[in-house]
Length: 347
Image (tube, rainbow, N blue to C red):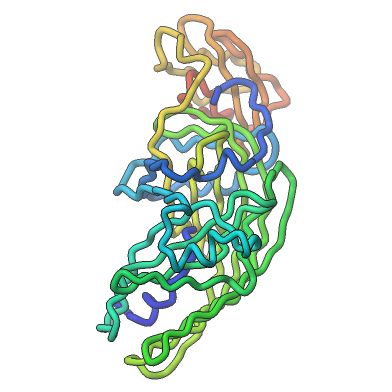
């Protein structure tokens, strides 16, 4: 394992009802709340269409995601921060850096033994005051917390944040532990609320706002025992699906060079207005189907929606039979019933 590359990640920030979808906005109450543990799990994404789908009233079918390991997120109330951290991030005399919670993070293995054992670090977050942001970090060593405020606070997006809004920000800070290590961050981000609609997870369906973040960062790192300093460029695109009151993103996918590299989802159950039907399972036929033919979606009438290859809803109603109109193009489509999806092809 390359200790230099490990060190580059040293202080990288951590990163409803199923019906006719309605737009939502992200407010303070929809962001992480202290004292709550969010059941987040790691996963692998093989369907690149999840990130390609954007626009209004979209549908993302991620119902086949599999949990590959727990990654719970547990925000800690700022009032429980150490005395040294509270002087910077919970002080009435330093309102610009006032935070609401922090997230403890395990310190990465650098591949070398440092003179001072570093236990971990905390990211300090703001969820009020106009922006969702990281104001700084706290480096933990032998029970002592060294707070480092960002010279340029890392703002994710304004609060509230709504569909078709865009936001640009920069961030910078420097950490210098004399004779041990130094780290500098210079970063820009561009975030756009590029879609809204329905996200289907293994636990149910959710009304969501999707954000797309382009992150460009430069890490300057020097570890005394490794000798020469080095610089690492990080370019990432992060997609996040936010639900009303769900705290952290219901689904998050990070792309590097256009390929999903990291992905997590919340392992939660969703509300669904059509779960009262006797059976959530259904089959469709014929498949493939031609224009003018009738698609059978069950033995009894039930609420459904049909989505094109871009995830946009093109039809909805309550029936067991749907005639395929001539203006629907040939290609792949999805019919959704009771939070479950079946794919079909028009030939």
